[in-house]
Length: 257
Image (cartoon, rainbow, N blue to C red; front, side, top):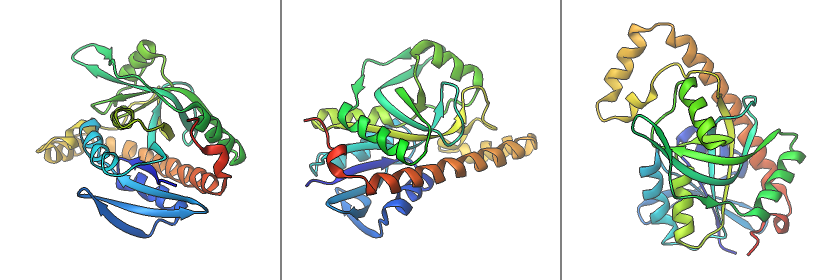
């Protein structure tokens, strides 16, 4: 059986999945480093993409065009665009990109997630005692850090979750004719601002500006601590879900085609 490719943006998200799947073996393909986990008859490749759609498309493209996969999964943390609690699961039915140049617009790159796999993912969530929010996921090329902008996206898209990488990964999966799944955990909520504009840290010289923003706004430290606690909850829930996922009968999680 071909491996399951699991893509996560950051090291923290990657580690949450690795803990669940005991992925200690490391290999490289097409210049991309990945971790290998095995449970039963399934093999998992856990791959860090980096933050944002450009990085995600580049890494996913190199891997998926070099190695056939039985399933492609985008995972990690997400913002809930519906009422939710930190640590809730978001299971995608479909994904599209969103762009903003003063006004948010929905991209024309809609990709459907595999329905049979999604049903299996929800069973896993139920067995793990996790609350699952099911619906559309949208991916932005920037960090959406203000509650006002999150609400605008919710009204435009009626989406359940917001991230930065899933649309890019799904686009590559579709190009390669591979089934797609999205499962993420909630790290921030639709009605709360993030403590900083984290887009500063994604720019080449942004670290200095980001550090300056923290210095001139000492109150942001409390917000950063809150976000760290929320991210820890999201990571723990992700680990719990993948632990249960790995123990579930593989027949119920195979794609519909």
